[in-house]
Image (cartoon, rainbow, N blue to C red):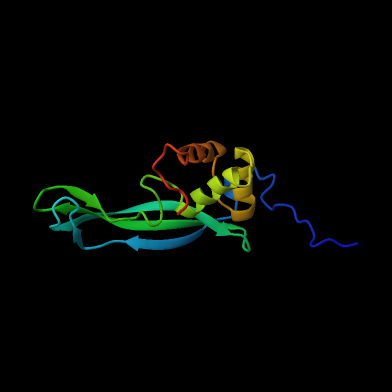
Length: 155
């Protein structure tokens, strides 16, 4: 009797050298603005410089490649009050995070709702979604998503 499908082992299993892993698919996003309102005084803040940041997103399971988002955003200085601000990138990821909201919410859901251990959730994210997240990072996200935290990872 045949089953629903044939088991195919993970193509990355047993790879020891990081250079042998599949290269990520690069997606470019921009939050680069010439001017934006100052959050402190609502005057016009002019762009001082642009910065790039790499975010790891859920990969493509059909091609077996991870996905990295290269986010270009602008930093601004208000001529009126002298304060500095950045273009808003909160729709993609939390400040100083290396992972998108989609990765964080999936990892937390795997542990909290599905009951996977942290290491199992880390392996699941790599095997099925081609995004590597250390299990200790997942543990920090789950603990931060507790009742005492004001952070909502379910975006």
